[in-house]
Image 1 (cartoon, rainbow, N blue to C red):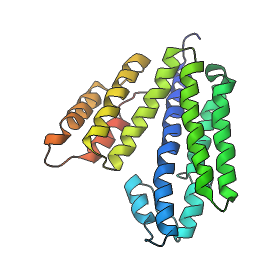
Image 2 (image 1 turned 60 degrees about the horizontal axis):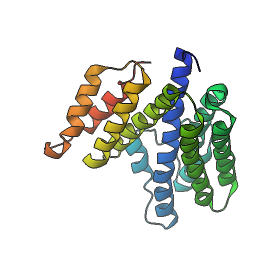
Image 3 (image 1 turned 180 degrees about the vertical axis):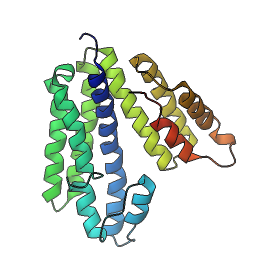
Length: 226
């Protein structure tokens, strides 16, 4: 593969972010779905606040259907998966048909989940296909730079989501180290100031009286300059 254009870089980066967003939010959604089906509570409002998305849902049944499977809801799992696919299909030459096929299989699985009486079982297949996509990308994509851009997007999104979820220091430190290595190898421009603040905040979380998760989200969102 030759020089990667700015447009290709942007699409690869967001392919990584959207595929990770789908993977992690399915896991969150499954827990929320189970709780509401079991009548533990209507906690979708907390779910929306946690991810900072508008609560446009009328009740738990509306949330369970629309957040999972409504393509007109820009924050739904299906919408994010379609964004991943829209980027991937343009990158067919860079990814290869076999790598792309796992994103296509994920779409097939989520459409089955949409009409299933047991949607969480089909959503597990979506997760499995996302995992397979990441694995096959490592084996079949020849360009190391291409792989690093995708994986940078994946790790950036994971830090973003983990900070919103207020997940602890151990997980965030691990993701920071992986993301920083991928970002440097990718050759993408990034904000040194954001990286320094992220490293300082995450590396010293154990010693902080109160962790400013909002600042971590802000800095990781402003990190990559494309």
